[in-house]
Amino acid sequence: MMANNVISKNEPLLEVRHLSKNYGATLALKDISLTVKRGVVCGLIGENGSGKSTLSSIVAGINTASSGEMYIEGELWNPTSALMAQKNGVSIIVQEAGTIPNITVAENIFLGHEKMFSKGSFVSRSKMFAEAQKLLEFLGVEGIRAEAMIDSLDMQARKIVEIAKALYWKPKIFIVDETTTSLSQTGRMLLYRLMKELTENGGTVLFISHDLEEVMEQCDVLVVLRDGDMVGTLEKSDFNADTIKKMMVGREIKGDYYRADMDGYSNEIVLKADCITTLSDLLCFDIELHKGEILGIGGISDCGMHTLGRALFGIEKILDGQVRLANGTIISSSKIAIANKMGYISKNRDRESLSMTATIRENIASTGYKLNRVFGPIISFKKEKKYVDNQINDLSIKCASQYYTVNTLSGGNKQKVAFGKWIAADADILIMDCPTRGVDIGVKAAMYKLIYEMKKAGKSIVLISEELPELIGMSDRIVIMKKGEISYEIKRNEVFDEHKLIMHML
Ligand SMILES: Nc1ncnc2c1ncn2[C@@H]1O[C@H](COP(=O)(O)OP(=O)(O)OP(=O)(O)O)[C@@H](O)[C@H]1O
Ligand SMILES: [Mg+2]
Image 1 (tube, helix red, strand yellow):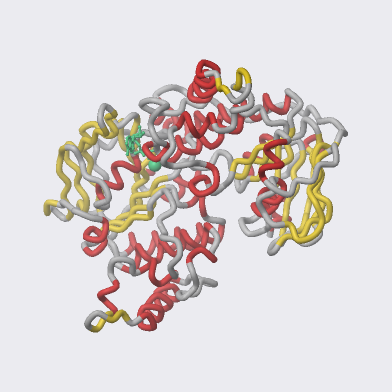
Image 2 (cartoon, helix red, strand yellow):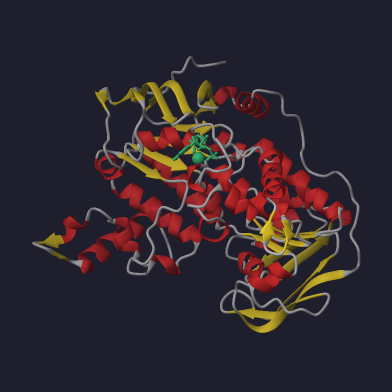
């Protein structure tokens, strides 16, 4: 079954020999050797913090190894920067946001390569815009203008700009790090097509995702990492979900991690959006959330569900109508929401959920000042430590210590901090926008358990998700949105039908 670290198809393209990486005492990669051949999509999989991003960032010149060598087409590969790697055939879509704010789409695409459009010291922006537009059209990207400011685009469109930027250089090796969680179905289809074209032309894709179904479908071979070790490789003919899970976590993971019950919820309404209208997306939109309810909201990415989440928490400007609590309080700002025991996990964790340069402890503790106070403004150090420790344990947040800054964590572990921060706060109403984004299967199960425990404790949850299995598995009621309106609504005891749900999204 194991292919002895060698991945078949044509000749080797990338070779990694005894590669190790340490961050202080943390061993992120331990003596990794592998060969990836031409024309394949090679999946790089493993739990959060297993070393996937570290390995790919070293190949892409963003990061340097502590020891070991790499070869491309038999020649020593020693990139000194991402720009240099890009020019020499290795491009990466990084896991975090990879675009730079306050500049245009075209400037993002050609960042660091502006000289291409210059005469003397003068850069021709019109030439740059034209070249960028040509690229977008060539790749089949619709609805993105080269001269648009990057900030005017949504998360998916910004990721597509990154994809275009990476492909401009016609890479031999194209690395896609956890990109698809930012993309809707159409965005995914575009990416899969581009990956296929690349491999058909003899290139190689390194593909990272926690979506096992997607990985099994898109990849030809898999490399499994666990805690910085390479545990093995698998050929497509040997793909099997249970085998892969076991290789990733090192123990058997059985069956389903969703709830099995049909327990309903109370009739008591705790939060109500009353004919709310936002700048874009929502027009006189109504929704009610009940005590003890997990209300699932689904739809395709731009159906308005993310805007709804923001509006319910008071961070989206509401032009007309209002969001109200049972006691009549109007939620017109996040400050009011928080003061009324509401919480919100943003889909955009880097910008809205976490403070990257603050410590794990500071991030989690930030929701607990009231709970951890002893008297007056004095915070009990002991209580606060326990508040943070509980989350680190429950969610297995992989960190050297809680005093490390969040930007030293792997992507999935950042997401755990964003989640834990609000679970700890013991909010009565929690709005979660894609709460399990980029989280590995083991921790997903832990998150679902915590969400369910909240429901059982009489809390109310709005679960906005692009993953149907998650909505079906966890919700008491599912509302499907389409173009800013409710297109379908169904309760758990009426039995969720996946096909029907999809039909109402499109
Ligand atoms: N700048 C850094 N400083 C200290 N430790 C780091 C730093 N960057 C990464 N690490 C550590 O290296 C290990 C591997 O992280 P990496 O980001 O490669 O994981 P990953 O497999 O990509 O996980 P995920 O699925 O969550 O994205 C983790 O333990 C992480 O905390
Ligand atoms: Mg990663």
